[in-house]
Length: 133
Image 1 (cartoon, rainbow, N blue to C red):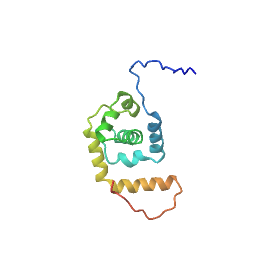
Image 2: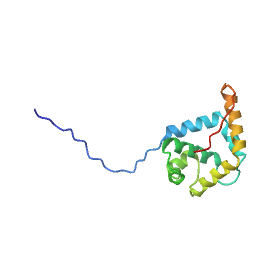
Image 3: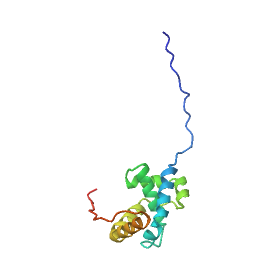
Image 4: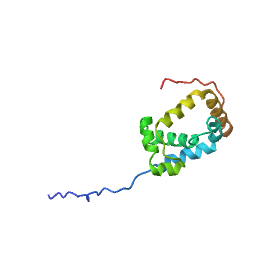
């Protein structure tokens, strides 16, 4: 019995990259549907667009889910910056963004909850928040 092995063609490195457009478009869709632009815009007016950064961070967490430093590298790819209409930035911007969200979490959570209830017909119940992670 002769067993032949199939051989793959050797790969040749190129400059093509893979951008997870599906997760970015999904985040953008729900971001607009739930009117998150209005919710987050009132917390920051200067510097980089907070909404672009948040869409990027959410997309990164859905795609890669590593560190914030990794998110900074991922978001600073030219193709991602173009999709999100952002300029190149230092990773410290992401830490400041998360700090801003943390300082305003009560109002943001309340606004998100209002947006969810206005778009979807959820039964209103008590909520127990778990902040351990």
